[in-house]
Image 1 (cartoon, rainbow, N blue to C red):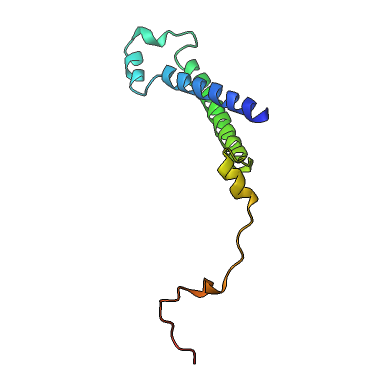
Image 2: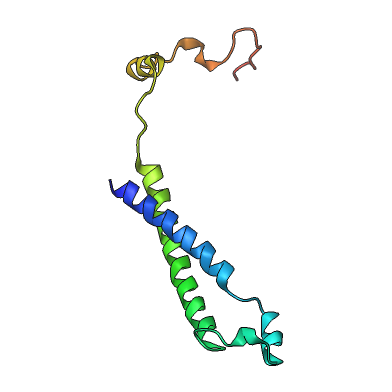
Length: 114
């Protein structure tokens, strides 16, 4: 439940972050405004939108970073249940005990012990 909620918040923040980055003007747009272009007469004024959009982008970037870390933490903490009959049988079967031939194959010559 918590994982799904954080995933939804993460997706919404990602979409909003992309939209805000696309709304912002590039550095080259300031030269046009200096020569009397009509683009400088915006709703926020000539400089008001830059600080508002920059702050909002920073807040959304921080939220995206935190939700990414939280989702990564949840991904490492979940245990996956066996999905098939073979995986269930493998998880229920104990490992065989180590045998005497665990020292190495018999056809490989061994160095003499001193």
